[in-house]
Length: 122
Image (cartoon, rainbow, N blue to C red; front, side, top):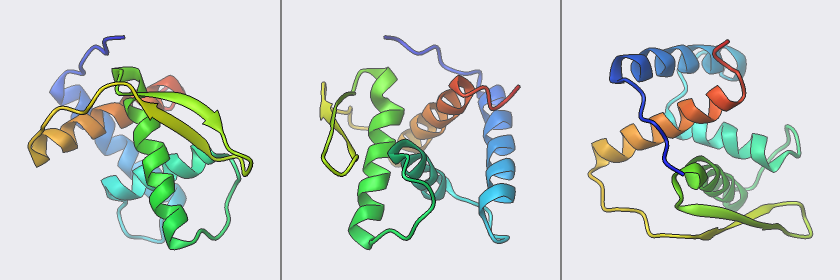
């Protein structure tokens, strides 16, 4: 499935709106960064609500989010839920080699697409 890329100005505007709204809802004053938003998506995708997570669980939450975010791009596919309810994905194709700035743009675009699918911007 090919995702239509956002107009950069549109992506930038949506990203800034998303950061502002999520920061207001989930932060104690510090602006959420890319990693913070990825973490929140992981918590959402896990679906176990707000609770304390161990360090390794936090890493796993970010992995879940990245897999979910890149699934529409054809890089990952949902595989199964384990006995503890954690989703597992399998790699369909290797990620391309991207420069750090390109990685950031890809993730921001994927996050905006994720929230658009949830009607966040309406």
